[in-house]
Image 1: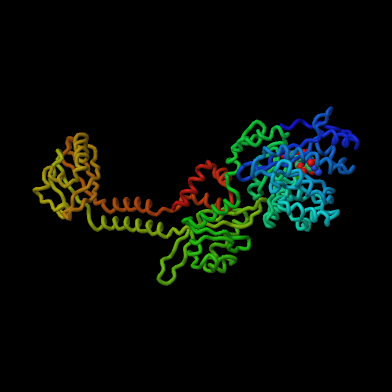
Image 2: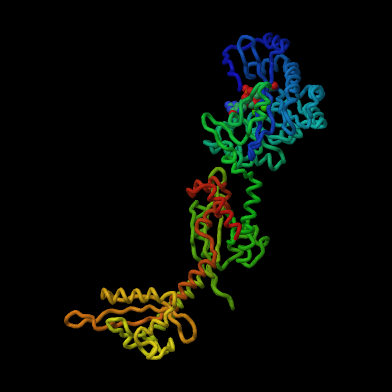
Length: 584
Ligand code: C2E
Ligand code: CA
Ligand code: CA
């Protein structure tokens, strides 16, 4: 661990610094650089420390500027570098080392040679060396800076622009040297979770880096929220206390060997995968694309001007045009007849209101069935929480609607049938023997009077149901309670038909049971309808509302973790939903 800095209020005099260089009192410390989306070590930045014989460890703020003013920075760096490369032998491929260079050293044309020689003493490959320069280095003498940068580049050394966003920021600087990395200044990172301004700047720097093909490194990452946000913005590397403080060379092996699945913040530790969700923006993009393409719903992302920015095949097909034909077009242009129905919801979503379960019916065109669509609208936010568009999900529920309608029809049919076909009245004696059954019984079952008399009617009942029916009848005969039983009977057609038979007692004046009067109703259609519904529900595998919610949140660019938080479910459950959606 880093030794505590001595807090010094007085300044050192130039001679003290000079003497310290001669005594070789400056030592390199190594601070981890970490790949944000994996948590893996990517290298170290070298930070100078003065191991003062009386005062202990002195930070660079106390001596770098003196060394620069006194023209000593060159020799300080030289001494430091020989120690750096000696210690760097334990740093394995492909880890990098990043070395800080003062602006005035970019005027020293021998710099590339110095670095080459220093690296050669330990055989450390120059392709794994990064030189960090600040923008101020580019202001004074650009010509020599360019010559030196060219020299470094030809050795394979990379150049990073340090403290970007502070001081002399100019986009021109980015072009003046062949940079391969951009370091986001600590000042922005430390405030980015609270200050929208800082967040915007960080997002802009990362975006700039991406569009120029430069790797971006965020300095001063102290909190997991910052790491999360940086990762989400697409920043490549992070450096800061969250990942490790600068350590002396003797601690390097331990830091390198340290498992990186866990990171420690104060007394707590986190699993890296919990922070990262292990999805970089490009991975997420691929995941998103897969969901877009594979989802059993139409998906579209619409910008604030109501133009299609992204959509999947299915939605394109619903609108009767190709994906390409949609891109850049407005909703109004693509579906003029439906637009008046969609517009109010899109506008509300652009105001930040999520709307789910809007049913829209597409009018019938010649020979076509009217389609019923179920729509949901979810606002999508940028990292500054401004609405940048709307995610739309559309499920075609026409089939489900048809099933529901068919079911209603069959129920109607059943009611009609009952109306038209009177029930089958029956009369039993007190012992449960058939005295009379309507001729419909004969018609349905094909049984003759002789066959059903006595307890003969029970022979028409399905063997599986018969014991239950006999039981019900016996119970009622004993208790006098009404009979009510459902069972299947064998029709003369050979089919089993469901009936419901209900009856009640008639007593004489003394209260003695004299007769059972009742009737059997054909409930077959109803049973069939129930069965059909059960099957159709299984069959029409529409997405559950929860799955649609998950899908929308993904489509708005949220991480699994954020989705889990928003819906109050675990990340595992979110993953399960995604798996289900994709497996359809
Ligand atoms: P820098 O290049 O911007 O280095 C990053 C500074 O941020 C380091 O300060 C580092 O210890 C500190 N830092 C890293 N992570 C965190 C964090 O999470 N929170 C906070 N609060 N700070 C963090 P340090 O070591 O005091 O160095 C200060 C500056 O001195 C460096 O700023 C660099 O400009 C300069 N410097 C250091 N070593 C050398 C060197 O060998 N040569 C030259 N020319 N300049 C050097
Ligand atoms: Ca630096
Ligand atoms: Ca810096």
